[in-house]
Image 1 (cartoon, rainbow, N blue to C red):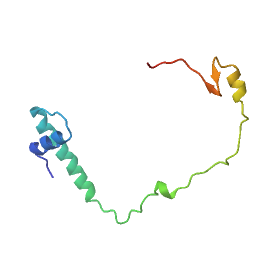
Image 2: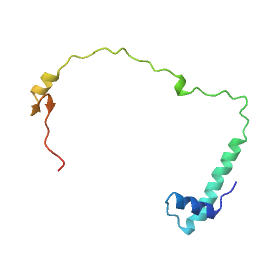
Image 3: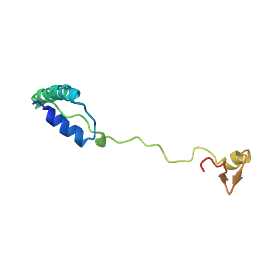
Image 4: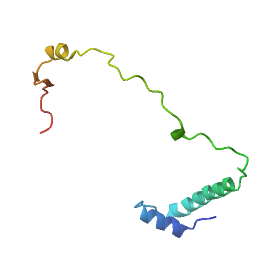
Length: 95
């Protein structure tokens, strides 16, 4: 399957990509080569090939949902420059 320069121009317009007239023939040739490769792959016999595992079939190893650390919030906020109602206060950066 080959692609013409007019088809490349149309696709470039739809994609809002600026393609010069010099590049149209180059892109048409390169895209045609890619489509020929895809056509070759499409012709490969895959009847004896078993499908690969799908990620949805896999299950995640989950850890137990237990508290692993103690609450050190007060200790950390004690050394903070500015805290109010359990929140860290920072200087305004955006006006």
